[in-house]
Image (cartoon, rainbow, N blue to C red; front, side):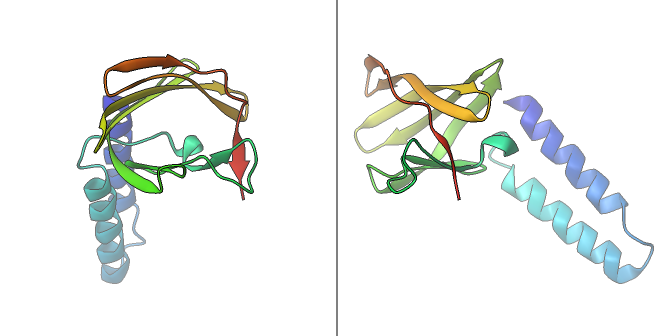
Length: 136
């Protein structure tokens, strides 16, 4: 989780320093830099390659992963992520809902993402879900 924040911060610094030398481009670079740092200020940033709408049937999306939020289509709700980490082939996220804390583990399988397990309000569940692909 920390390395994603550091990568975003490093990208913001590089962006701010890569202007063409004009005052306008430096201001634009600084604005882009500030936006990048502000977006990552929560300390939670999902891997860019996983930011998408995911479903095994795109006519009925399941989840949308954003930089620091997750939208769960069955709940019709967007939640702020408390943590997000990609370690090996496991993508783990945690967030709070009105029903309680959620911790989920998704398995990255090539270009697919599969919900494998989770803890929902203190109750553990193991899922045998179909792999999901990115939806247009």
